[in-house]
Image (cartoon, rainbow, N blue to C red):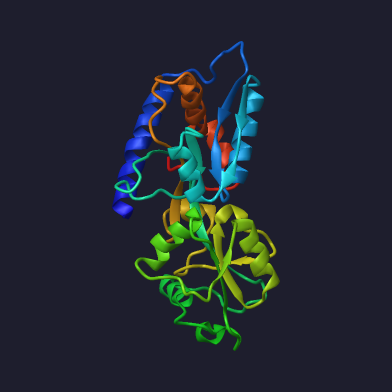
Length: 277
């Protein structure tokens, strides 16, 4: 499955890079244009950042934004409600063929309460916890306390990435408590001293502690240098390239090109790691 995703990334990035170089930094227009750009719940703050910055540069461009989990956003895409949405997950190409334009890099971040004594986990240990095979923090050098496991819900792109990067073919234990968003995972872990959860890196704050995985912290630097093991890309995903066959295609092409430019990547870098140079 990971091989399929990498193939999509290489092709999509080449298409956008070649296209955007031939376009002006902004497209002059005398008429206001409203573009639809939806987002998964994990990527909604980044969509808000990007669209706000772009509209300041191009006052005639406004955005209609909606957000839900990955499955709901994919359904809206397939139904034609939006031509593109921002996500931290892509399906296998044979299940849902999409055109994917990479716009940043993410680190799937494993969280514990700041009072937890453990210094880190391996990927295998995280897998054992989420399978229900390991249930006490004392197994990892922590207190003799049962582990409270928080997981994202079915349909979440972040959960799909977690299953791909950590679980493989193994199932999350039914005893895991399901949480409907990354923000809610952070709140839940902050309230429960014996808990564990996972989120996109942009949601980590001082209420929780991000664990090193396989001895490496989930930092922007360690995503860029490819040492953190649980890395993924952020994408603007659609069913086709904006090739001019639809009236607003030029606006989407210029916007995507801007996001991949140095100026757009500076906005991405406020929350995530930028694209590889």
